[in-house]
Amino acid sequence: MGDRARQPVTMLSDRILVSQPTNEGERQSRSGILIPATAQVPRRLVWAEVVAVGPGVRSVKAGDTVLFSPEDRFEVEVQGEDYIILRERDVHAIAAERIESVTGLYL
Figure 1 (spheres, helix red, strand yellow):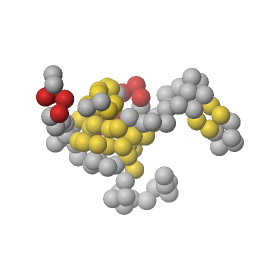
Figure 2: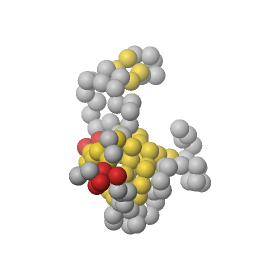
Figure 3: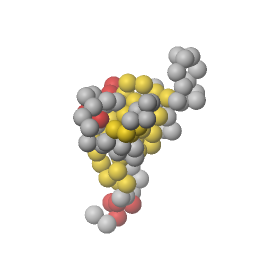
Figure 4: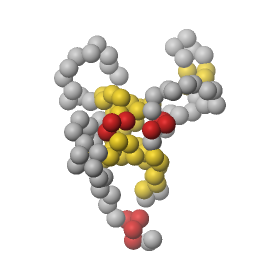
């Protein structure tokens, strides 16, 4: 597999490659309570940065930040880095400077 690890990766169809969120550990609530990584939070969505998109993806671009369910993902290692592969339909929201519609929410 030696040379295969150095080949570029191209996403196909409606697939999106995102960098794995690094903040899946402890979190802090708005009131300052520390929530350990082992705490069960039902169906919590997470944000990740888009690294690459397939040719069938219409709404997401590389560099965007997307919101998705951790249950709708496939993990993959590319050149020693962990990434997640999603389908475009599994993305719940997009945060990007190019999006002009105002929702009143900012990251």
